[in-house]
Image 1 (tube, one colour):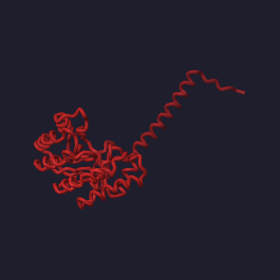
Image 2: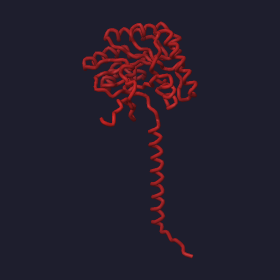
Image 3: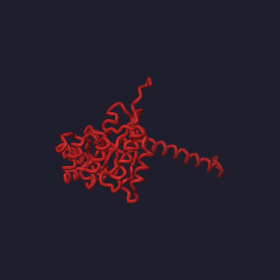
Length: 254
């Protein structure tokens, strides 16, 4: 009987080969998992110098009318993502936003972490909020922004089942931070905006009303056009890249 004698060096090489193969297999699974993950729209690829500004309204309401007045002064349309419970509490503000020509969109009904819900619960959150907004504005929302920016494939699929789009943001003003100042908000937004950006503000942040006029004037002077998110995004024939940028789908001939 012959015995196969393996030296220590050969054993180490064999173990390294197995480890490398395992890494390749695990890596390919990881890439596949990342590829399968659905993404919402963070921004849009465009040749036009257009951007969209948005406000999330979930809690307070002290500055909503002030924001409406500022937006009117600079003739800027905005998209407001409101929570259903906020609609219940401030229906007059929802009407004021709509009457001022702004779009009122869906930010869920109770502001939960949506991925923690079942698909049926997600759809209930979306539909309840849509119903409340439509009852006041006469317009049914077509966009949803997840509370806390928290999403998963199930949420995106639930939103799509209601013929809606899931929207995030590419420029966060960070106006919600305790350390935020009007100057820091201005500098952050104006330095990060580019064509196709979606900018996030909040309707009840302390320094947003002070910062907003400077931001709007600066960006207008720089040649930017403000549009609704619903007008910025593509409705069909698009892809979303790994950064969340929505891009026009290219034909094979292109």
